[in-house]
Length: 314
Image (tube, rainbow, N blue to C red; front, side, top):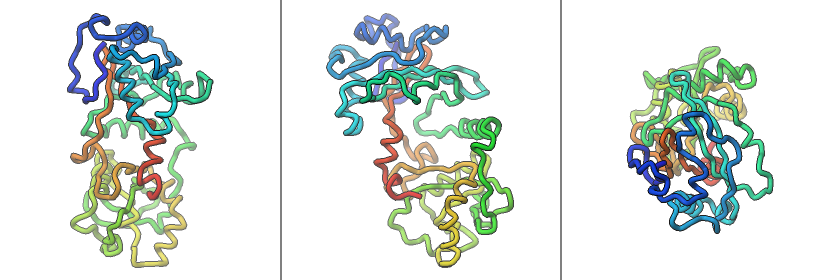
């Protein structure tokens, strides 16, 4: 088992095989995280153990990493003392057919050991390493394909109102009318304070546009759906009647998209999409085991709720 560090994947340095030499307490050794048991399929899945802040050992490398996670958590989470460790089994995409073992550290103020979030113990196609600065477009395409083939009508895009829909052709940078049944991507983001949204030509993008939108166009091309809807440029901001009609039908526009990119990072449209065209991602706490890696990340719901997008984005 290797150490939990603040670095990214390629910065991990292997440790000796002996648990004692790795500096783990007996409790952390007993978790068998990152050991040969994962490869043989014998690792425990489901609820693993409870952790309290007072139980963490100062001379254990894994305990101290838990301390770091607690100290960087939200205010609500930092007030809690009991945390629970869960394990899930995930499967990779169809290309590799590998199974990945995920360990979740969650804060649960309730006394229940199990809830709906810990019952997904069957393999699901999302387990993947995340390269810090490069988005995984193949994984996105695989997820879309899986959705189209397996989710049936519950998850299919609804018919958009093509008569009022204008789309950016990301290859030509022209703004064109949508065709009936057109596949397209939506961008949900924060406008910021810029005022140039009302000055664009109704037929072509300006030569310089916010990086988040430029990044979204790049993503749309990479996943094979090179048509993007962005309110800033796909609504004629000078046509009040058209603008009013589209705003009233905004739900239909988003529900008609094959994919919606949510830009919840940053304070304005110039931040860019993390992992796209050089926009960096935040590194996460990472435990590199003998066969698998575990990444510590904050609760997505809390991250979104405290973001600018969570309060102002479409």
